[in-house]
Length: 267
Image 1 (cartoon, rainbow, N blue to C red):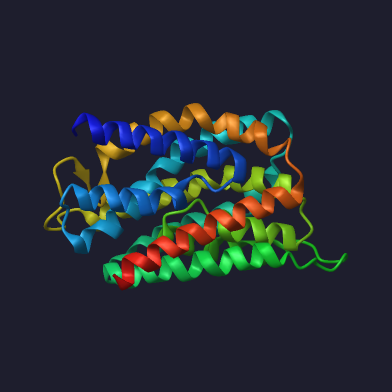
Image 2 (cartoon, rainbow, N blue to C red; image 1 turned 90 degrees about the vertical axis):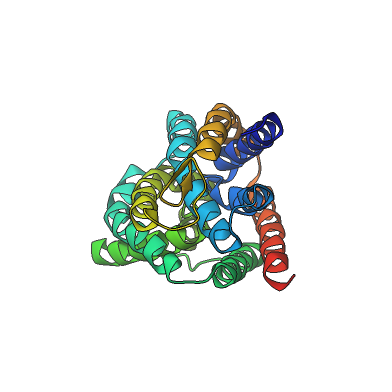
């Protein structure tokens, strides 16, 4: 990689690391559009750009998740009992998601990303209050919920917060606890999804030098280094913001990402 590309990935990593700690999103959804842009500039084949961007962004979450969850855990915000119930389904779903993504075209995958993200942002902005009696489902329901979170995370390259945060808040988990718990869930999502993207991407024709399956290792290393440094800062900031402001930041960010990916599809 030339120096300009390294600097671009460093800036991107710092920004997404902060977002990972602030919003519990693992930073992956921020990364997808920008890594796609940088890979396209590197003249990676068009049909591989979105798949590689999603795979690489998912891999970075292994690092940002560890960094941000440590900061949240120190404040006692992570609900580890919820993590234990969701994690098995998440691991299964996160392996299946990249396989489904491989069957889709680049434009189809980008369109799915945009629609899914926009829907999630709308749900967050509407902020419909759950019934006071609503609570998390029992173990079988949590296994199924984890599977859905994992599949969709593997498809869009995120840490699962687009589903897990609304799912938990809808079940009367406080937003700060939901964000912190989502950060903890990012690691099993990223680990299973990364291994899946390596497996299903091996031998794919047209992959650039430095690729491991669908993962572009130079981008992964630079982004992970920067994001691990800034994730704890985002986590500390999250605990100083009011709930409504946190949800509004989350939603606006998601709309911007959705608009960019729709632009990529129609241009």
